[in-house]
Image (cartoon, rainbow, N blue to C red):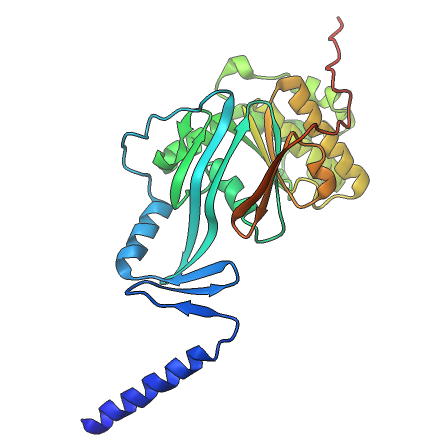
Length: 314
């Protein structure tokens, strides 16, 4: 018995010694949980009660309370307040967003700008109802997103958000027209339906209308995927690195199209990017760094097209 106690004591001493040898890491022990801090990245080893709380927040809708019916204020279409996001792996938690507060006005082009790991894609997923915040308020187009269950999140996305992804996600067995029509099909409000053939004409893609994805270049596929997003005529378009896989010339064409959508339809556009040239095209640039907002800069956007919408002639 005495021998066992002695071995346990020696083992504990050895473990504590190993921990103290971590030069770059400061360890702050509390009752539970304890945190390991390396620069500004916080990794927490959590007790069971805290784990349960975090899992519930990340995966289940909030119970209705006084904040359930909160709406957007003023001309804002996106209002985020003190949003935190913590990802779990076993009993280890990593803080990715650390108290984000921002607003986006209707009709703005806003850029979430930052390096890889800054939290910009996580933030985009949360404001577009693809993910839930661990805590904080997210009100988009008069809906308080953390209170939505999975089915209502899906309905919200269908009615309010159009997505542009870096990898196009076109259906390979459908031609361009039919791919774009799948976007329009999701819009149940018939008064918002757009003329698809006119979209192809307006965005100089008539030659691609009946081509299949395998018959088009990457740039053409990306432009068709943008038309699919437009065809739903939703209030908000979110784009995650829309020019990331394109050459400079094609990327410029895509950015012109996004400005044209914003000009012609008044659509709010939120783009994730780490490209300073893309940031110049926005009304607002939100600089993120290691899960924090470093700066929010309002600016006069650089236009790639005529800022005045041309008159429609008969």
